[in-house]
Image (cartoon, rainbow, N blue to C red; front, side, top):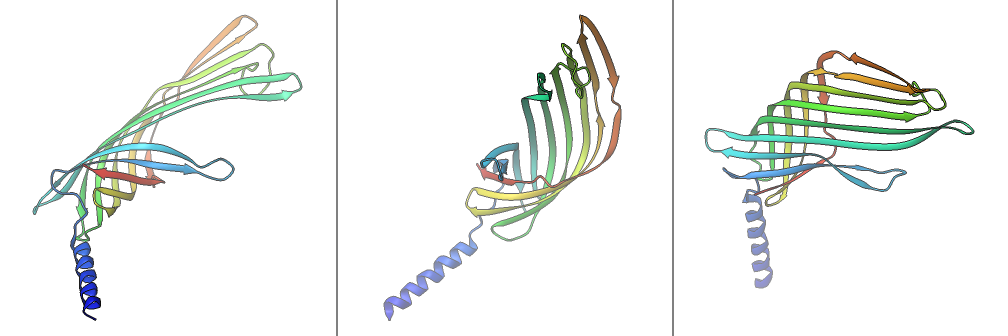
Amino acid sequence: MVRRLLLSTGLCLLMAAAQGQNYKPLNGDWSLEGTLLWQTGSAPLRFNMEEIKLRYFSLNDQHNWAYRARLAPTFAKESSSVTFAPLQVSERNITQYSLQLALGLEKHTGNNPRLSAYYGGELVFGTEYSEFDATNTVDGLNFTDGAHLNSSVSGGFSAGAAGIAGIDFYPVERLFVGVETSLLMGFQHLGYQQSSVDYNGKLTTNEQNLGTQLGLQLGNRSGIRLGFLF
């Protein structure tokens, strides 16, 4: 009976200590995190790091701020063949890359020892490039024996301001997972398209300004944000 009483008392004390423990960051802490995406279905399970984010926490009785810097690079290269008819094959190569940099500020709220909700804003800047190269075609849609098409878009950039909101959950000390959403008001210059067609020894080139656009964009940033404090 005494042993059961002591065991019950000990369990209660451990539970109380766990509930009272604060897993969230302290003043002066840094965090480093990445967003993990995965793909299932016909393809094997694959993980991809979408972005990297660094934060510095300035927490005291007057405010609970986190200063953040986010970097989101992407790169993709794909090669394929398109068959129009027997003996009519076009070889294609597509290259794309982009880079986005965002600097911002978060306001953290809530007294739960494991959950930290926040809202804030960030300034977002980006650039991108794409290239399409194909044999035996002049337009990418039809077969033209011996022709060679190359088309690229460069000089594109974007800038904007976004409102952000999210939540971090700390299952253990110094480790967290979370979700985040944003609403971006941005300006984008779509860049310049340069195309060249080499056919029967004659080279034809063309350049076009793709123009600009301004608008709102809602981003859910799918995937799991996984990070740690240091």
